[in-house]
Image (cartoon, rainbow, N blue to C red; front, side, top):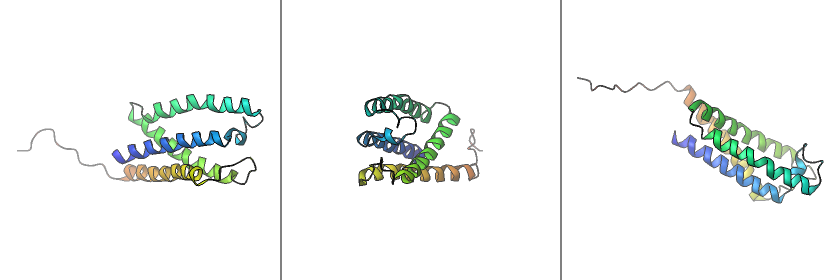
Amino acid sequence: MVASKVLNQLMLALLFTHELDAMTHSEWRLLYVLRSLDDAQGRWWFVALHLPMFWALIALTHHAHARVQGASRVGLAVFCIVHALLHWRLASDPLSSFQSTLSWSLISGACALGVLYLGLAFRAATLPASPTTPTQPMV
């Protein structure tokens, strides 16, 4: 379905752009694993860990096998929703500086597209299968 493909691509674009924005907000300070590191080390690990994560997201959401691709896209949609909830939960943390319209547009935009994607996926899964088109012309 073209709509789900476009939603997936837009979710990835919003998420990746959010991560660019996250660098300007030192997001590693909010992550439990990286927050204990000094800024230089935290920044290095934050960037370094995104390379395999971005590769995996692109590879899995565009996988040749439909089941892998579908499950990965659903996983991405769920992640975008959970990610937004975590940012909302951490908004009052003194280390969080995600206050701008741009930051929240990227975060909430990915979340909204995740909800929409899951809605479309659920709808597609519950619709009755369409009748198959005969391969031979009917006489």
